[in-house]
Length: 449
Image (cartoon, rainbow, N blue to C red; front, side, top):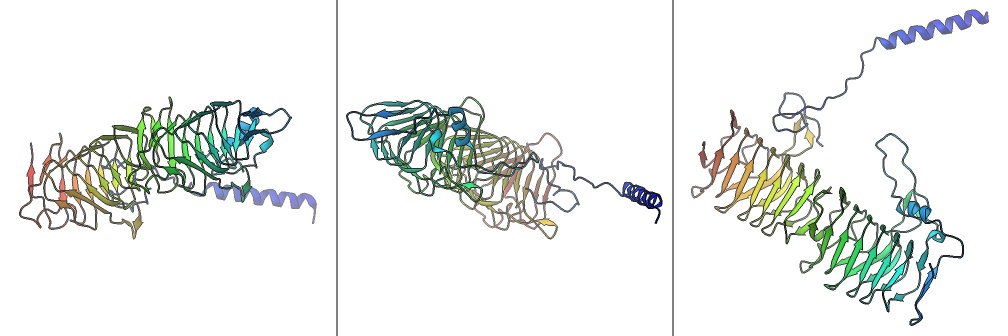
């Protein structure tokens, strides 16, 4: 065949293919819509809903801080490598960086034998701990990062102060991730203190001991295994964690363990999951919360969340004469809420249903509201949307709604089982409010001021 005819034929075929492709309809991107309940799910419409979703030697002791070597340490390089995180999906579209093993020669100092402080010490630069350390009531200051790969750190009323990051994980990599640390922090006494001016990164395979004392963090905190931040095993714990940074701090507990008590000197703290057991002062968090997996007792204090909150976990929430104030929406998928003379205030909408979809409809929630006392109070500034498979308990207290009320299953608004109920529902919106009880259950008393 003539080569010119062959080239002409190919060009013609390519041109025809290009024209046919240009006539195909462009893919339709799902637009984010906001429904009457201020969520982005299309639940209220007729459309099918989408799932929501330096060497230092102590001459008075046999213990020695061992230098890393005679070569000059690349401190900047050590900081960069030590802080590298476990590879995760990069949402920017770029390939996620695979972590590399950390060269221990880059650390300014190492402790690889059992060491007990006999005076206050300062380590200039980065420190690697791979053996037992006892602060014995003294202060150990690290001006760089501290990487803790093995051994127990016991405070014994001493202080560990880190100007950089605390990194509790191995320097070795396996299957594209840093291996777990065998290190453990022992907070046992009221005078035990740890101050981290940078980030707190934990990836340990042994449980921490947060029984007393205090931990102060000024950067982000991430616990990948859920073993270091683990105070929920002992109800007698008095340990307090304080977040005192000057910018936004993100707390990410990857597993369902928690702090005991937290303080927020910095009000720009985001908990991806609310993970603390109780409160001894008011706490303010900023940013959306994806879950409340642990039992939480407000203990008469006020917890303010400036954002949306979703409760997936089946554990209970005890307001206990306290106030939970959510400035966004509250999605209640699971677990009981006990008011106990406390108050739940939601500026947005209350949505009691699952974020999962089955057969074109949202699945039911397993959540339940317990109104049992006259002082129990719930105020919803937006819509009240209920789709629960468990019966609510509206025996006393007040529910105030400023938007529409819809109960799809008839199980939440269900006061007609108890003739002794004194529960009151108040409709106080400024515009038209629509109440749709789709089953034959009812309120006990309503007020329409």
